[in-house]
Amino acid sequence: MIENVTQSEFIDRFKFSQDHKDNFSYSGLCALYDSIQDYEESTNEDTWFDMIAICCEFQEFTDITEFNNDYGMDCKTLEDIQDETLTISFKDILNPRKILPYILDKNTSIKQLRELMTYDGFIIQNF
Image (cartoon, rainbow, N blue to C red; front, top):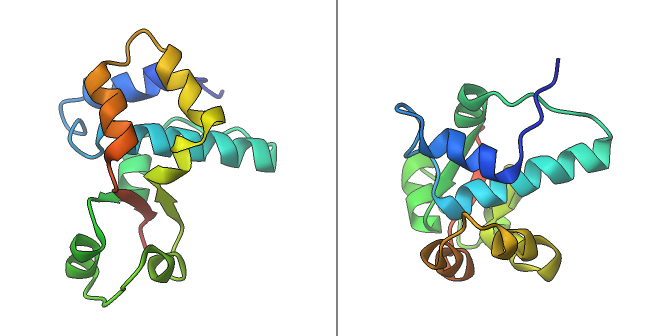
């Protein structure tokens, strides 16, 4: 049994979770949702919504320095990190095809849209 969740449901489940509401920013959740959707489309496989597994498998960073401190590495660019693991850049969601659903979503606030447009963070698949 696969549970389909919309972008809004995906975000809300994290934001209203007692234990996992601070794991990802709004931009991070948007990028993560889009990445999972892209994976499903490219592999023609459905994935389970499992919040705990997502939190264990992915981690958000605000910048490369934070990543280097957590992993004891000396990466200079996002490309250096991409050589080590799957990396989801928030800039990936800023193309017109991906940003439109967030603009049209009645639950997306101006503050959240501003964060989407300006936040430079990224998510990695933990290794």
